Image (cartoon, rainbow, N blue to C red):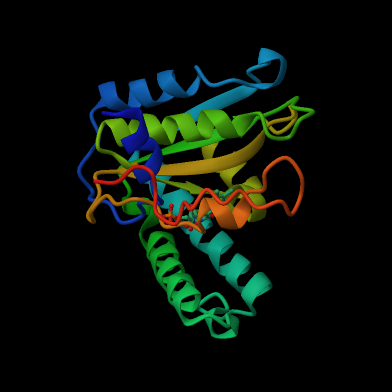
Length: 220
Ligand SMILES: Cc1cc2nc3c(=O)[nH]c(=O)nc-3n(C[C@H](O)[C@H](O)[C@H](O)COP(=O)(O)O)c2cc1C
């Protein structure tokens, strides 16, 4: 696959089929992930690939609790994640779409065929893990696997997850993400984002680029 196709179309693909992912693909996703850079090449990371149904059921229960807590804490329990407070209709629709899709994932987390639990430690930058996470997702995309980067489990129910996964809790590990993975039920498409001109300046703050990049530079 063209690298730009992977970059432009790797989306949060939450709705996936229950069909298992061949082990060779799971292997390659992690093998691509560990090629990613980390500060001082420390590689302070571990990956737990979960395919066992009993463990997925347990993680699913904890994920749902974490998701419900997040929606309650940050959106006062509003299932549309505050879409009604978004002034722009188009943006509000997007928020509703994401909240529905995220709620679907929280209900169906245990049915996702594979999950990559991503852990890190000893990382003064606090961000060394994200290139590896993204590389796992891009490698999945190259194999036609849809992924979704999730963080609520590690944020709100880490103790439960440590217990379920038998992670030592005295070694400094933290769960940065759980990447869900499976064959997509929906279609791939170019990620819709605020255009480059809106978010980029040239040389100094406020100096417009005038690159006229209203449309993506790669499309189907
Ligand atoms: C740091 C980070 C944390 C995220 N956490 C979650 C999460 O806990 N649950 C979830 O369903 N999606 C989560 N997402 C997915 C985002 O909602 C998604 O990437 C975003 O809406 C863009 O989706 P798109 O690429 O399909 O347009 C997270 C994404 C990022 C980058």
